[in-house]
Amino acid sequence: METAAMDTLTETKFRTAMRRLTSTIAIVSARGEEDTGVLMTSATSLCMDPPSVLVAVNQKVSAHAAIKASGLFRVNLLHADHIALLEPFSGKMKGAERFQIGSWSFEADGARLTDAVASIGCVADGSLDYGSHTIFVGRVTDVVLGDLEHTLLWREGQSARTDA
Image 1 (cartoon, helix red, strand yellow):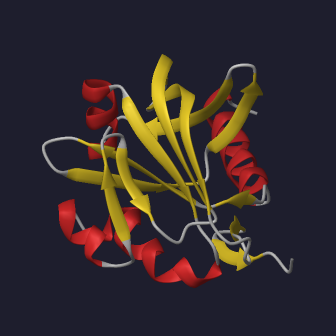
Image 2: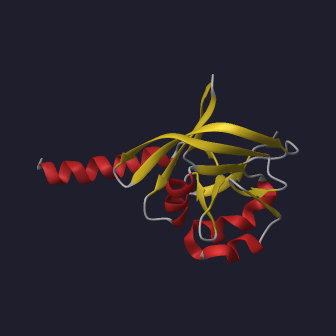
């Protein structure tokens, strides 16, 4: 089998495998020239000492430039009632108009979804460019816990909710 064909086959299988990885849906927000945010499933805890998270942000989205410039960002974990936020923050809408949907508080580190399952403020404590993304290590500076409701998940290219 040719290398190019193998690469395409591997890429297709990898994409399918990653679609099967169930992840919590988050909106990562930051303050730039205007408030910005991006929908993602690549936000995860790193460690407790110091409390930290990892986010992988596409270098082409406005949130990337804002995080690079300010060194601050906020991770907002969504619940099932936030399904209306998926389309605007997936790139279908641009700029501040996205924040007209939902209830937001505008903090120094980024917009906080006031009824999020959790909202985590961070200082970018390190970064690594890898392929099309930058992996930011966020040292946690603030945590706001909301009601534990049905967390919004992403699996097989669509949203789902937890039953607990």
